[in-house]
Length: 116
Image 1 (tube, one colour):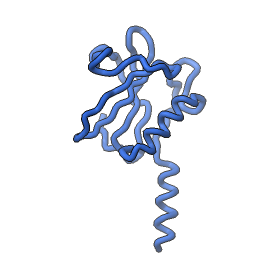
Image 2: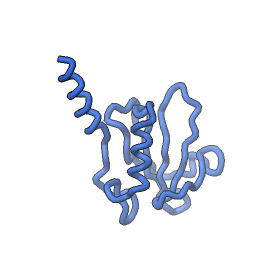
Image 3: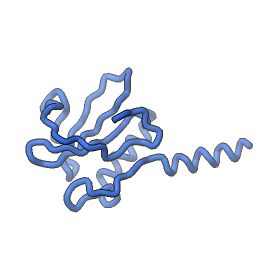
């Protein structure tokens, strides 16, 4: 029984993320972007995977990626990246949340606690 539970847990972890089938940015999708795959892997291994998410939005006319979380007890800093993986800034410092237009969920964990 114990071995079956471990096997089920391992299988569920291997299918634990919702991935987009649409392009992230022109010519870039979740499958062919190594920097984005690395970031998602970091989020998955963070110990708080169920609170992390990535949104795609428009900022000053360009598509950007917002890395955020919905942790109810965390003092969080949300980072904004270009499609190429360059850090543009942080929400509340260089970028105001209202400056991001048309946010769309790009990724969240399968066991996500976030509601959109």
